[in-house]
Amino acid sequence: MTESSKEELLQLIKRFGAYLTVKMSSIFPISLHNLNARSIGAIAGFAVAIVFTWRLLRSPSGPQRRQPKRQAPASSSSGISSQSNATLTTSGVSSSEDTRAQNVVDEFFQPVKPTLGQIVRQKLSEGRKVTCRLLGVVLEESTPEELQKQVTVRYSVLEVLLEITKFCDLYLMERVLDDETEKKVLLALEDAGVFTSGGLVKEKVLFCSTENGRTSFVRQLEPDWHVDTNPDIIFQLSRFIKYQLHISPTRTERAASNVFNSPSLEQFFGCV
Image (cartoon, rainbow, N blue to C red; front, side, top):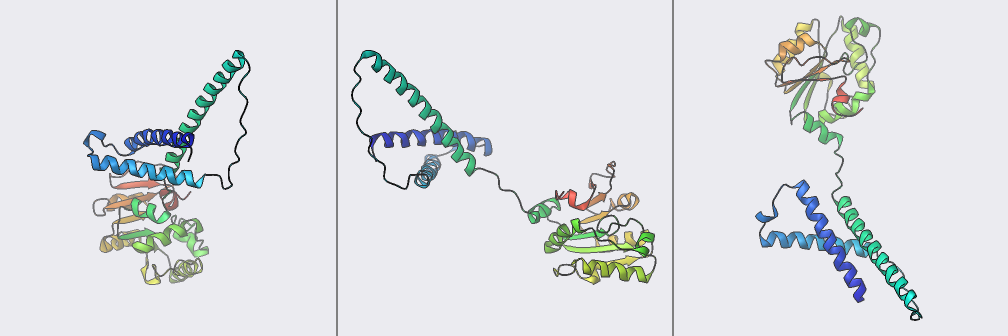
């Protein structure tokens, strides 16, 4: 390695270290005065390792050709011009090195986008049991009368449901007017693939004939979260259930501090 290359690498390490210090201090609010010599040495070694790796990855693959020697300038005016060009070149290299060092640090600290599973866990505060009504949340229909005519599964919510079943005990429930409608609902859920993951089984889809019946189901199961579209049921259960999610197309006032609002279940988890 030539002297100029060593000097260039040294300057890059210095700029990298300075920029890394600023970047680290913005992420970890720890004063450098509180770090001992061993911690500072570890950070410095970490910075040098990244820089050397980066330099190796970006080094030219082929051998460099030796540049021919240029003749000395013949006049004083050309010497002044050469000195001016050298100053501009040095300034340009310095600016370029600063940018390269900043790019290395920015790439290293680029945030990683969380997975849907991680978002679901975080949003549900690690809850282990969830109850959810079907109408208006999992199904397109909004009344039991509509279910007698047809049952339409909202496919946009299926991915969220399957993620919930991976680490939560999920129960789906709904009020129906007859046994025939109950069979239609189960068949539609089965055709949509709700039961294929193994996390949700038909026995965990509960049916009742009244809205109070759904309230009783929730009270008996004592979930960490309950999802519903009926504001009256949300209000009644707010004293007994740790968290609730009120699904409503229009923004409503929170019934209690433990009640959250969202236009849909998938929007609550950022899927739309």
